[in-house]
Image 1 (tube, rainbow, N blue to C red):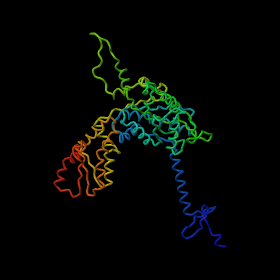
Image 2 (tube, helix red, strand yellow):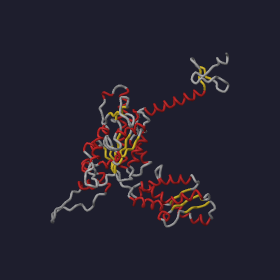
Image 3 (cartoon, one colour):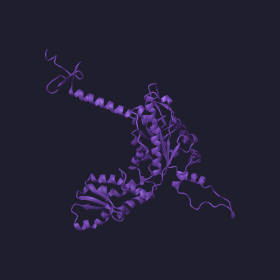
Image 4 (cartoon, rainbow, N blue to C red):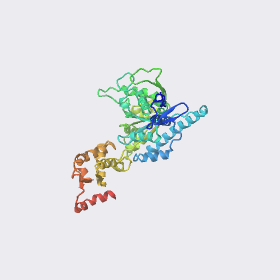
Length: 432
């Protein structure tokens, strides 16, 4: 009878023994296993509360730009514009949240949000800027491709699928999702001036713009389970505080802006005005973009009005591409050097090699995205052979190797002093 009446854990029912002692409470006992499990559960609750906690004090614009400088090379004007816009947005949310907590929200002036439109050629860092901003502020972030969006009732994703993905990024927390950032890429592809091969205007682009209007401005959307009809138990998501950032290359917009800045002068004779000899660059033209130019490009006026902040990004030159290769925290040279380190091999680039890589990427016309393609092609054979050679300790890439004139130099552990002396030249240039 005594064995049947021995003390047991009130949670799992395990009997007390020398190997599993129990902690005595007022109403029962608990074992070590249940204590550890309870600790895990309570810790997860704490993390969820911390995630759902609104941002009390957003970083100031100077701090935001300083953090952007670590990942994005150049684009000074765009980074300043984005820093101010993001700071003002989350400063407003923090102030409204604090006023609501103390019951003074009725006395505040309602400040509307300012969504952001990024203009710039492909590969200039639009997506990187948006994702880095979300990481700085610490809010959920999703990227949506405008070319995959369709009107409700057509095959494809509707605009509400963006909110489903944002809610997933917030781990199901509606409060956190309502403070998130949505980046809509390829927004220029929705321009209604785009024509098909048959010369018929693509009306679906205008329809998606219309569908995005209320979502971008601010509305309450009831989100049910994906693929099912919405019901009363669906979650209600308010998009009024979600920051929308739209980006696109807007190829051809420079012609629209240039036509406005320099109207055609067709007069003839001695007193006719001649056009300016020095035409502005595409970068300067993008900075001069007005809402009317976007309207002529093909975006509907209602959609343009919901993106009052316009930031133009500049085309990257060779010097900027070289900095992208080496300076950011996640620079490509550092990434490939880490890959070689996994095989205990050092990867080194001369300055001449970096310039050659930048020139080849620039000729591809894809901006910073072309850098990885050039490096992959350049290092592919070496990465294929390297795991088979245990004695290689260093790989040196010079300009001749990038141009395809010579193979990449593979230096082994038993390299003679004369060979090491021969390789000193390019190596010293890199260190300088």
